[in-house]
Length: 404
Image (cartoon, rainbow, N blue to C red; front, side, top):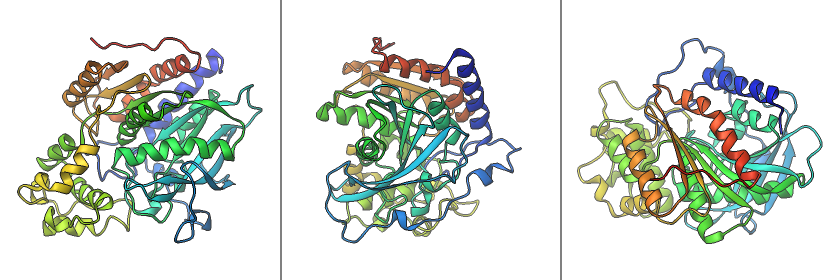
């Protein structure tokens, strides 16, 4: 692992990097204030071309979840020296159980691996959009390049899935935590096939909506019981989908509700978006597959004008809410949950209640709350806690918990 001086340097690097990088999109997250002086940040976030690497035959030749389809080394990312990148394409399963191809990237230190291989952090990204070109592996800095590179500099391999339908030509379900969890879990096996220097032990980690996916990994592992999986970190507010979207409908981002309808139809093709959405919302709905940033409508459009009365009682919406409920199963391994007062996923009260529910069912949870007006401050400010917790899992120390 890194020396103490190198640790201080990499933490300083990530705090700076996160501070200058605004969101590429905010379709399914609450509006956030951004720093003004970041005219160059868009250059770091510029999308890369969608190449043949991401193409798959239709129908897709059958493969087991986690089976590698292909890989390629890639050197066009905006990453620091000493970080190597390898793109992967692998088999996963959609929320409906269909075989799908999922893309991602593996980041490793550009040096000899330690005995037993690089310990692995499986990264679950925030919501970046619905369109195929919104995949983090098609962004020059991988959406959170400074954070991911910091962990590589500390001696970890980072496996970052795009989620099925971002990058590859499949129907997207990247607001469905169970679909995302499957993509994260399957990415680890595929990455090991592409990069033999990866070790067996791994944790899951995510930010914002990806934090919910990391928690879903922990719950899915209660059935899988992979002995090499060591726990999950969620740098995120924690809320059930029903609470989150009802909050959005009462005054949040109007585009969030169009995203909800899209995801419900992905899982349940019999669902008709017009059963839930108004004409204004349907206009946004039809833009989702063509751009990573979609306007929420004119300045007079509010979320309450986007959905029809009783929208939350739709039977398909109810099924979506049920599968996107945190704490339906005990977590297989320990959890670190880091959240702030300005979190884009959920208010701190929602998060505290959900954490209490996880504690009550016996999950081992370390809950860290930050009082900050900026979500980026929470992500960067909690780096020391993240590093300490991760090191503890890979060295076998008892996991901390502040459940009461």
